[in-house]
Length: 151
Image (cartoon, one colour):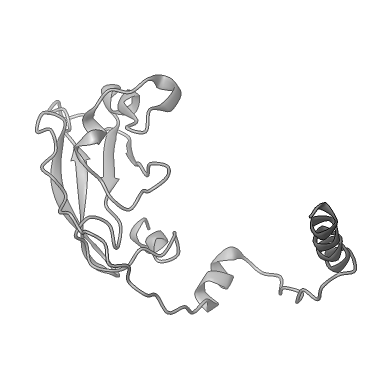
């Protein structure tokens, strides 16, 4: 059995070493490559849950326009002191197309996906729900079309 594994590994290494033909890519920007990219997406049949009401003392639920249609988001509460404030759009790691009330929970600084430190220091935050997330229109595209929602 070990000889079979060794033989298979040797074949793969040999093929890779001697250069299985890989087409040379054109030089250009990622933006140019993205605009020329065409794909056919197949929607996955998954449960599509609406965006829950956020903790009202921290956020309000809004919708925003995107190429995929109206999408949901949470916006942090802005102090009513008349001051201008910095603002950020916060995209969490991992499965970032959906949002839930978890953005208002406390987390340790070593893994705070909620960015609560920014909010607590007066930075206005938007947590968008992207295309295909929650019950939004569109299909999850693994950060192809989602980029258009963040412009």
